[in-house]
Image 1 (cartoon, rainbow, N blue to C red):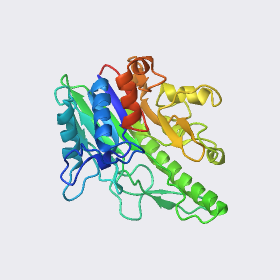
Image 2 (spheres, rainbow, N blue to C red):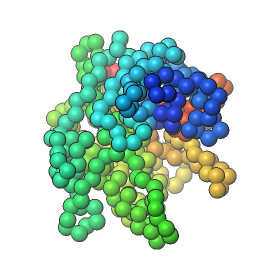
Image 3 (tube, rainbow, N blue to C red):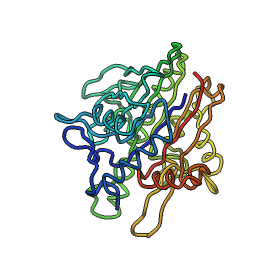
Amino acid sequence: MRIATYNVEWFDKLFGADSELLEDDKWSGRQDVKRGEQLAALGIVFTAMDADAVMVIEAPDGHKRRSTVASLENFSAKYGLRARKVLVGFNSHTHQEIALLYDPDVVTARHDPHGEATGKKGARGAPRFDGAFRWDLDVDAASEVVRFSKPPLEAVLTDKAGQSLRLIGVHVKSKAPHGARNQAEIIRVSIENRRKQMAQCIWLRNRVEDLLEAGKPLMVLGDFNDGPGLDEYEKLFGRSGVEIVLGENGENCLFDPHARMALSSKVGVQPTTARFYLGHQKRYLQALLDYIMVSADIRARGPEWRIWHPFEDPVCFRTPELREALLTASDHFPVTIDLTL
């Protein structure tokens, strides 16, 4: 079985009000890329991956007239993908959803959220991801309320033999310091937002520990917008959100080989899953943001991870159509894992 995570930049802008594909020459949300060009490139990438299930990060928004499910199923039908059914969880408060696109001939999928529902006051521990989490963000002995703008998607995949696997699709993001008027305010707001992101990762880790203690095969996958050594604010907290979710004390730890490489060598060669253009520097920045973390029982089955990087993966690089499609489709590249349930 092949499972993927793929953050598709501005997927939302490729669909009209009635979930139809906008295959035209108008500009997409991606810089210098037209909507028809991005859709065609995504069709090539998804076809090449040929995954049984794809955790789509930044999936198209759903509202009164438009459906995330219909949008992705229309996309799948257009490009003849095996993964043609869509599972969504709790609605996002943004224009970016988390959705699972899967092949119903291989697996069934259901939304299976854990934790108790909370009111506005929130709760400690591991409440349901559409609720609120209480945590002391600023070490003042008073807990604050933390929420996910994009609640993680908890899904259970079951194959035809009845073997099940739990997935948690994640898009954790530290907001930019909007409204800051000077450098001091930028630093203050950035630290506050980073604290909230860390609290979200603690919340997620609490859920991971509950599931691992219950003996559930588990995979946590998606975009963390964070990683070992990624920015200067990590020094204030002594660790990254990725390290929190992975686990740090040798018990009930998750594993991702790319995170392991980054943790073991914070200076030097590291794998990357995203490529951004920095206009003020006139150069590209690469970063490791996307992960597929697995529990020890899954790791014991010898899974194989792959980053579909257009320059670092030899097959992608030697296939011009795929290489160019990866660059056009998104500023992130897919990560896949091949495993046996």
